[in-house]
Picture 1: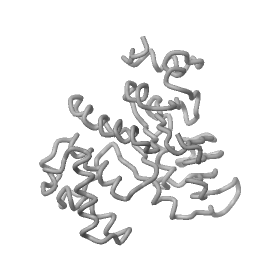
Picture 2: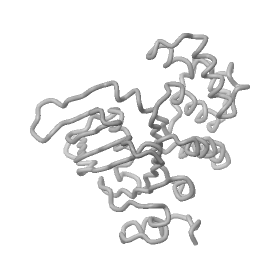
Picture 3: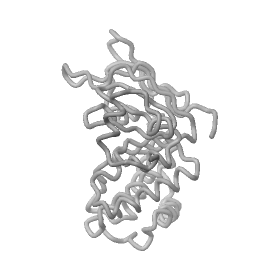
Length: 256
């Protein structure tokens, strides 16, 4: 695991109206680290992830991506300091696949490199075909998303995110919209990425994935990080009564 910093979050707050959804999050993630974020619905997990690439604008706090300030705003400041380039270092995979229905699989994957990075089309297609092969879907390159299963669509979405050559991948409940029998294929692709050293932040309810693939697991509740540590620590030696209660309500038993 590299020692360089991938993500540094300090004092991150997020309000929706009067509701404080994130309550002063501090977070440090190294390059090459795989971090699983677990917790009950409404605990702020997805909001935290969406703040990391400014899909949600934080109310206050500092976000650095690889030492570059992506967002900085202290209490009382009228306007935040933002620098957009850091957004290109992160790729995001959503709960809903968000593929463009009018485009083929291949067109979905090459669209952003062509438009945003101005990549040569031949090079973009070669890269896209390699990524589709990586996720096991090269033979579907000319099909439209409507003809794919949910699991296949999510794997295309992963290939599409990877096509922008991000250094950090954000996954927001990537398997929660899938039928149970389709979850395994998506998790295998994510496990392969982790094995290749990709920095990954994964909001998930798949406890087995968090236990077996993550280097570190973070438990959030009510907008705050309650506990974090190795999977062994979190699942076997949790200190927080709230985490113990949460785990007792899941069917996860990998650590006995």
